[in-house]
Length: 97
Image 1 (cartoon, helix red, strand yellow):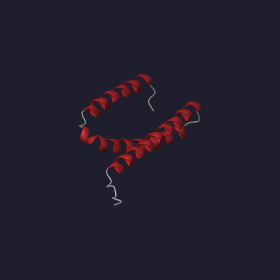
Image 2: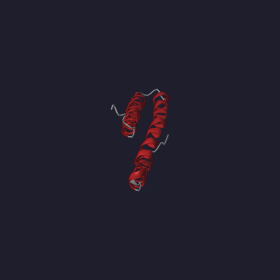
Image 3: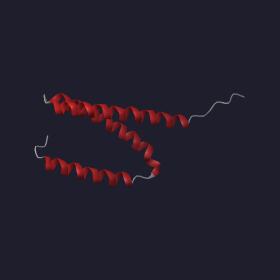
Image 4: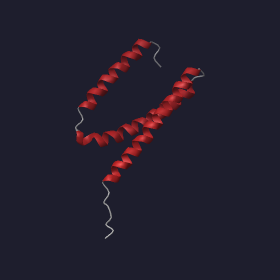
């Protein structure tokens, strides 16, 4: 981990600006594949959060790691539910006639 909080904050702000710039350049046609990619990234974040929660004995890191796991799981489950609903819209409906 980074010892200097100013360096960590600088990296966070730069990552935010780069992320916003990259996402704003994505055409609307590619938004659905981008959502699938963000679900995969959230899965990776769950692994990192589990490692952070179990790495140190301090209460703060354990609580923050637990919260990261909870929020990443909500994001992954919600992403899969939205993807499932979108795929259901493209299924052909059976005629009962």
